[in-house]
Structures are given as structure tokens and as C-alpha cells.
Length: 274
Length: 267
Image 1 (cartoon, each protein chain N blue to C red):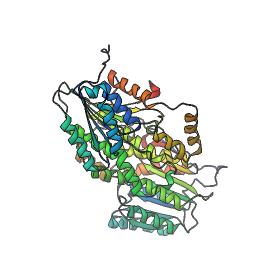
Image 2: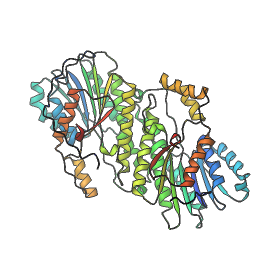
Image 3: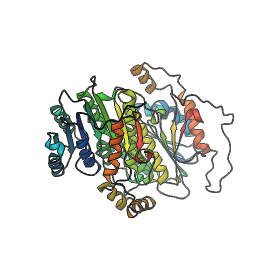
Image 4: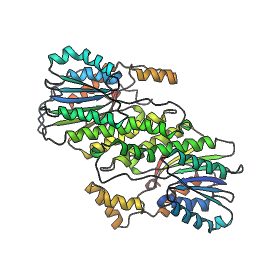
């Protein structure tokens, strides 16, 4: 695909930035944050949980959201010695985001943490599914399509809206919303109508949000093909094998973008572009 | 190198959603004039009265008097049963000597433009909107393609009535922009999968319809609301007829790249 052609090496990964006149957030860390990661139990979400937690200040709260209580608890334990030392609070939110109860529960847990003196709201909309990879004509079942769009579009909008409502305008708070996207948000691929449609929809959705909310930094990030279960499914279903990135490497890039914080809100950035 | 433009759309089966009002109704009228004798139109919408009025009007036209079949299917596109009835009516109206099957995915809703994205925390509202505006066009198109597989000597055309909102974000229009962007990609995938299928995403421009009235009276964003009001006040809204004429010309010439997004202002 056309965008997997450019690779640029960056030598300096942890630039320190001078404090900007327009906001007083220190970009050398993510600040004392409430960080919500959906689809945190596996793959990219899990890698993000590891990477992001390195950059959270003491007093930060990490909400790990996914369906599997077991996997979330394992992740929490993996992070434990670090999070204890760094005084980070970790909540496992085992919910199904394809259901309104799941979205509402996530918002509820976030709200109960809003009492702390939080400087930064960081919401990473990562949870997604592949959907059936099949020719267009096979999608005759409205319930199947509705269910797919519900998880992959509606829940990201409803969760983002609910979380932003909880953390409404306080002038000192930095608010970042990330949409984990894909090259397929821009490039149609035969047999991938569900996935492409949802990613294109989300991209537009977060672009509208960026235009509406000048105080929220919206980042649309395409992580590249990574060594995750989703890629295993892709290989199994399509027989197409990509050269896969380690999820941690892509997670590193995303964290760097958030630390540097010099992306234009609503921008679409791909792992291979930055 | 192009062959002379056709003056008709063949002996066609043409399915049009949202046919009772606005742009869909105009498409129905224009199609009726441009298809050859022996054609059938399947008009679908929720409003039985408006459909029947249109059906009666078309029956009185030259084409109607010449025996053109116009079937109305009162259906809610967000119900499987509704989609099924549209396909059944289409199958019933189809004749072996038809050489063109067309589906015009026109039905859509604006969504609540009086609110910003951050207010859409009710998943059911978003689900319901996407069901009508995205899912139904995918499923209806899939069912129509299944019901009418490619045959030699027969053309199949799928039209997606799109919008500038498929390409550009507009404040307070999150649902509409999201669904149009979704459909845009959906039909690009279709075009990439089926090279024998003619797929067109047509953006009709700002039309003088009930949807436009709602847009200019309810849009939350003051700047965007003003731009709609100004267009109306300055007579810059397009008639459905003017825009539909451009769409029909595109279909007659049949020279567009399949999967393309064509805006009336590109022409």
C-alpha cells in the first residue's frame, strides 16, 4: 500500500520543550493524568498501557478497559511494581464497549476519579474489531452490520462524548483524545468493507470533534501492522502476511507524539510518517 | 475516443430509496423519463401517502401511459423486513429483457445538528442513526447485488447520494459527516471489489429541500448556520431538478471512474 514507503529515523526521542506561553503544561511528561485506554487487554492497547504508564506523574489514574477481567488483572499485575513505585492508581474496567452499559460504566469509573487534581485527560480509543472479511455482497444481515458499527463507531463517539462531559472545561486541564486508526481509513481494500467503513467513519468523527473543541487535542494515529492477535486473524482469514512491527515500537511513537504535543488537532499521523 | 452519449438509461429496473420527497422524488421523476419502455421503478420510503401521490403522477406521465411499471414499497430501511420487501418487489418487477439494474441509495437523515459531538453519549441514538444512514445502504446494496448478479449484456449501476460532508468536517454535524464519510468508503470498497459494477458517489450540492430547511434552522454552529441562511437568502440553493439533471448526465455519459466522488460543482 502506498503509505508504507517512507521511513525516517529520529535520533532524539525525548526532546525537552520550553514552556509555551499558551499553556503551562510541562511536556516532558504526560502530567498528572487520568488516562483511559480501551482494548487494553491485548495487542496495541496493552503495549500502550506499558508505555504510557512510564510518563504519568504520581497521582495519575490509569483506566484499563476491555472485556476480559482476567487479562486486565494480569496486565495490572505486570504493571504493579512500577505503578506502586510511581504512585499510579490502576483500575481494571471489564466491560463490553459494544453495549451502552459498558460505555456508561467506563464513564462512571472515570467520573469517580475526577475528584483528584488531574492536569491531563488522556483518552485513547483503541478498542476495535476486524469484522468479517468477506465480499461486499455477503453483508445482507442488518444486525451483523449494526453490531459491527456499534462497537467500532458508536461506542467510540459515546465514550468520548461521555468522558469529555465529565471533564468539561477547566482552563488548566490538558485534554487529549486519540483515535487509533488505520491506513484503511483512507484506502479501500476489497473484502474489507466493514473495517474500512468504520475507520473512515471514525476519522471523520474525530475530525469534526477537533473542529468543534479547540481546547481538546485530537490525534488520529495509524499504528502500522503490528505483531498482535488482530494480525494473526488477518493472516488466517486472508493469507496475507505483512512485515509486522513490535506493538511496543508503535506505542513508543504514539507516546512521543503526545509528549511533543506539536501535532495539529485533528491531524492524521501514521507510524511510518513520523 | 468516447462513444456517443446515450439518450436513455436502457430497459431498466431502477430502485430509488427516499423517493417520496426532496431529491429522491426528483430522481424518480427523471429516471421515469430516461428509461426505455418496459422499465420498472421501485420507489421506497416510509411515507405511503407521498409515495402514492408520486406513483399516481408518474402513471399519468407519457412513460406511465406507455406502461412503465412503478411499484411503491413502504419500508423502514432500518428493518431487515423492509429491505427484504424492497428486494422481493424488485425481483417481481424484473424482466429478462431488462439490460440495466440501478440502485440509487438516496435515503438519509440529517441527525440532530443542534448539538455538538460531545453531547452524543447515548449509544442507542448513534446506533439508530448509523443503522439508517450506513448499515441500510450496505445491506440493501448487498441484497440487490445478490438478487441481480452480473449477466452478460446487462449493466449494473449503484449510486450513493453523498455530500461535501463526506470529505470535510463541519461543526455540529458529527452524525451526518460520519455517515457520509462511512458511505463514501463503503462504495469505494465496492468499486474496488467489482470492476464490472458502475459505482458513483454523487454530491448534489445544497438543495432547496426540507433537509436544507432543517439545516439552516437548527444547526448549532453559528458560522455554519449563517452560511446556510445566507445561501438561502441569496438564492444560491439549487433546485433538485438542476442537480438531478447533472446526475442523469453523468449516468447517461457513463464515463465516470467507478467509485469516484463527483460533486455538482466539479462539473
